[in-house]
Image 1 (tube, rainbow, N blue to C red):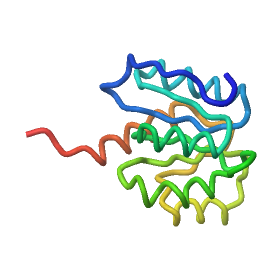
Image 2 (tube, rainbow, N blue to C red; image 1 turned 90 degrees about the vertical axis):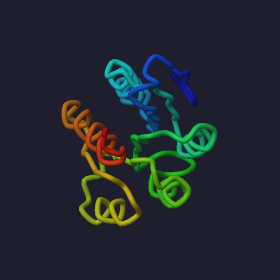
Image 3 (cartoon, rainbow, N blue to C red; image 1 turned 45 degrees about the vertical axis):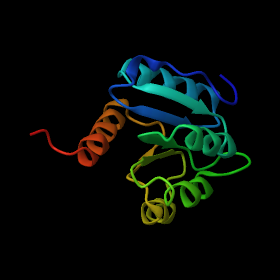
Amino acid sequence: MSGITGVDDGGAARGHVLVAEDDPQIRTALFRFMRMQGYTVVAAADGCAAVALARTRPPDIVLLDIGMPGKGGLEVLKELVPEMPDTGFIIITGNEDERVALTCLRLGAFDYLPKPADLDTLAQCVKAWLLARRPPAC
């Protein structure tokens, strides 16, 4: 799973998730976990690929690493948040610096999770974003 990965359209009804992570093992684990949760998933190994994928098909959720080659997560946030106000950006990073977390939240990230991310917490964050942005059923 290097660069850009394929799409599993089985989860289109639940939502579309973009995983942006340079570590191949973490990227694969997040990709598989989100797919098992019923989401359509694409993945990128760096920020440039993430921006390209997001612009091709705007995701509902972006799981975004901060430290990536080429274009880091902060740059991706600065670039995509203004373009995609309906997309939830969840930061998943090994950088536990509180200032970085606050910067991400100020830039428009929905949440900030330390690595290794607790998958139950991640699933709840994704569900919370999707529920918060969808209008209530009549």
